[in-house]
Image (cartoon, rainbow, N blue to C red; front, side, top):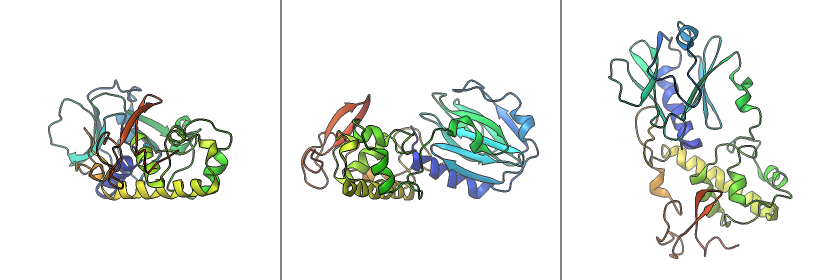
Length: 271
């Protein structure tokens, strides 16, 4: 699933070529995504100017004159700027047309969404219960320490809970915990202020490095400009079970945690 770095990479890739452009139409080849594409989306967008492109959690918000198009790329989707004349491939379900260029949603599993919210996009119910942005001022050591008091759940599970902090999915939770030298199964409530500060710094560093590398391309993801990400070449533990730790040389371990593959080094990340 595209995580925060992939969505931020897409956001930046869309903003530069399309900001200020006027929508001239919408082509919907398949309405049946996780939630149906609004049947009147073409009428809503026709003639409207794209005023801003921003991100909240794993959602993209495309601000137009009268409202906001909210896009989630699902588990395997991508959103790319293409020439309008380019022939669509089988999983290219929606085009937002801006004259000679189009914003094209490709979603093989159809778990993505395109929703219209009149006025301010953040007023949509999807954003009501989300936690702070991990790269924003609201996510700091004091916040993490306070938010984890009394929690018995493993810290990796808490990092992936969007009610606590948004956008830190499976890949980047594993990588951040390694950088912080914290075992993923440690109860969140047992972390003291020092380890909370170390983890916040590691989360920020990991996400910033991933954004700089264009995110991770493991299967289908490409950025708004169609380019793959390269952060997977920098992984310390994710998807490296049985391989030598890049720091200490011990074999990386893998275990299922909350039905997600979890990776760690038993030497660098002791409980």
